Amino acid sequence: MASDTVRLSPKASGFARRGRPWLFRDDIVVGESMPPRLVRVLDEDGRDLGLGITGASKLALRVCGPWEGTDVPDREAFFHARIDTAIALRAGMLGPEDGVRIVHAGSDWLPGLIVDRYGDVLVVQVTSTFVQESLDAIVPYLADRLSASSVVMRNDVPTRKREGLEQEIEVVHGNRKEETSIVEGSVTHTVRPLTGHKTGFYLDQRPARALVQSLAKGRRVLDLFAYQGGFALHALRGGATSALAVDQSVEALTQAELDAGVNKLEGLETRSGNVFDVVRELREKNEQFDLIVLDPPAFAKSRRETPGAERGYRDLNRIALRLLAPNGFLVTCSCSHHVDGPRFEELVRQASAGLPFRVATRKRLGAGDDHPALITHPESEYLKVLLMQRLDG
Ligand code: SAH
Image (cartoon, protein in one colour):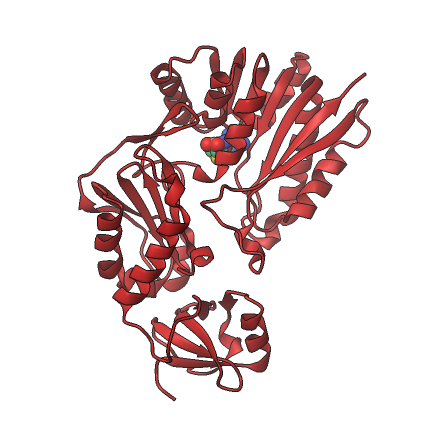
């Protein structure tokens, strides 16, 4: 058997045929000690299942789609073709000031690679050794295809440690830009590619920001876990009478205030502190809001942390529902992989038990179209957003 071929166990062949993109070391029968590289994946009978990327961690093989013929293509051909397909999928989203996820890892058959575009700045995040070693075939091509003036590597994610990769942030193409901006729904957002959260911005929440903007007219808004006030700014653009943004980061809230100024939006108030304390204080003062956004960080980073995380979601949602004015809306979010959609809804159901008003589920949203969630890969559907409404009268 050629060294660039791996053969799967019968069980793993079934998984791969059903579209599961992640396979573990025990699933591989032949080709056990594999340096990170691109391989042909064969089922238990030697039939072709397309390409895969091998890795040095427990996650030994990530499948990355069919490829004509029986050979393994060279790295350029593979990455360039997959990048072209990813760009084509987002063709309608590439206005000069748009913020767009260009490559969403395994969902684009490019496991271990994230690429976000903020206008002419690209931010790349890598979690696979093979992708890391292939950056010379990836970065210049991306820069050229997307006319980038700057490419930043945001390789400061803990999952890199699984493959023994270093934590590093660096500019690998063009100029260093501490700040850039994108325009979304008539709101300009400052993005800090080198120091902001994630790759600089929470691009995945675009559909929920649009929803908030459409609901906000004449409403008093509370934006909990606001970061740079993304939701609050969209609410004000949508005609909210006021927006209170709460976050523990003074720096993020300062940026929210600056961005309100850039957008000539009035009515933003910020409060730094622990959301768990601030919501209790608001409740004690009998404050009420017509529209509340609750967008906490992933409370459950591992399965072990799930019970505590679930308690956190339940408590926060309960108190947020209690802060709603009659007929008010709650946009409640979870980005924990370990709390799936049905479980999150169950927690919100538990949070609403015994309240003196009815609570209706109005909408279910996820990440935007530039973050495709594969039905065969539940982990890719990490972001859950529910629009709840308090019903009175
Ligand atoms: N809603 C934001 C993203 C939120 S990310 C947006 O759409 O852009 C989560 C935010 O929660 C981070 O800004 C982090 O600083 C903040 N945070 C985490 N734990 C917190 C806590 N206990 N109290 C207040 N803020 C917290």
